[in-house]
Image 1 (cartoon, rainbow, N blue to C red):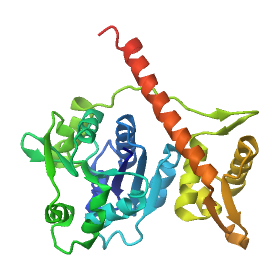
Image 2: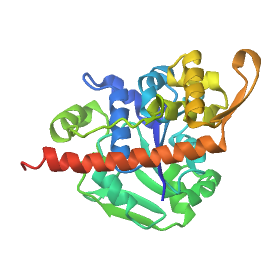
Image 3: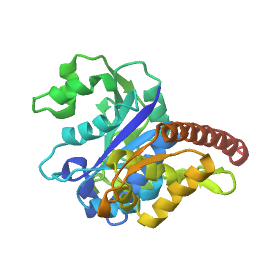
Length: 307
């Protein structure tokens, strides 16, 4: 069952601006931490909702293989709007979706795995009797959430849906800790919940030359979202000429069309990932995930054997 995640980093409702009050921690590093946690727990697709300082955030995180969904009206939107933006984008790819605001970044991968193991349409982690984040929902609930007109946000929509909600007790205070100076967030992040060391393996497909890897995946995901090669290149922080060269090399080495394009002047025309390109993306992601799992297992055997 394919898993996705939506991280709300658009503005005040997502807690993004809370980081500006912290002296030694910035939002981008915490979002990077969240992405790593989700990935190690087996989450395949991650969408980050941006708005406030969107360009800076997208540039900082451009090479992580995620999709950015920008909210142009983030100051008028609420958390529910951000959640729905991500849910609507990922619903065709993922059967179950995590949602978390950017100011709750310290949960651990064990919690994510335990939540994913629950067979329920809604799973909410609970630490010492208090509900936290991330929340996990089944994609079948999205239409009902979108129709909700109450004033209790995502919580109200889930309650009104009538779906079974599992409150999962976890030994992870990180599901509650928000990025607030008054909550001693930085002390907790550094001392009590420090980043763990883990292996990261870069997977590339090679024929005569390397032609498909993380950079190509990022570019293709943006082409799927934007329908334009030039805009996709800008979103991933690469030049248009480099993006075209990546696509051309990949198509030559793979022996098939990966991106279907139609000319369109200055904008570069419209574009979409071909059926063969989507198959290649799916197989690459599977390979990348299984290699990462193997590497983590060997890392634990080799580096943690002394314990």
